[in-house]
Image (cartoon, rainbow, N blue to C red; front, side, top):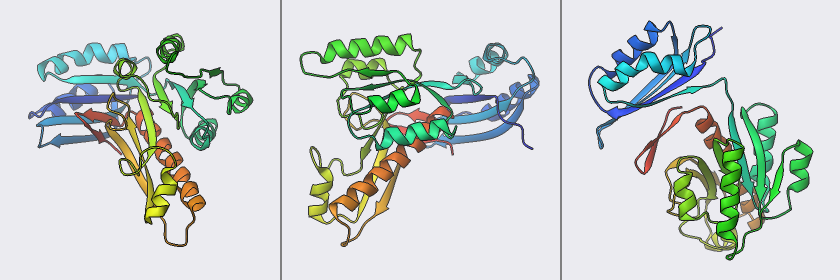
Length: 285
């Protein structure tokens, strides 16, 4: 049986010869074993990206690895991170009234298909309070108005720090985060939306898509930035529809696709398989 990885090493740098060999030699010198390795060189930016899953000897910590790996990182001017897979990410889920993504995430978490700790559920409505209480997860009702938006965001940011939240999932949270909050949480917030954007913005997009006779519905999961719904894309998918499908069919298929795409994006993130590459991402499957 293949040993499970304990750590993931992520590397980004200028594309130079010798990086892979130097990294491998450093890992082996620490009595670690490479379980999985993937790399990508972007010809358009001359950037190099690498993900290495590692099993370590008993007692190995990220601090021990960092101390031994620093000479290689310095020599090759690497931007790098080492993550301990034995520690589950702490996640806050934010939701409004549509609960398909929330319920899917909670089920996948309860079955350990998404190995993460949900620290709280935050909503601007009370719709899913009983669901959160049933799961034993703290629920925070935070209604948003133009007058209290910045105050509520400040409270939410304090909760993020207090709960030591690693990732925020917007599971159909229908409020726009302020530019200031997006900048503070850069790289730590994942959003999901239907793929009709930018063609069908605003209310009832599925109804408008139905009226136009669209032949597919889809979803996009991406990191949140100050540019609304235009952050680096993590993953996408579509579902095919035809002339016999009703508006209700489109909505059902769209919600299924949104749930599936969001769960996939979260799994990729918590396994440290996603690396930012400017406005794009490198995703190691």
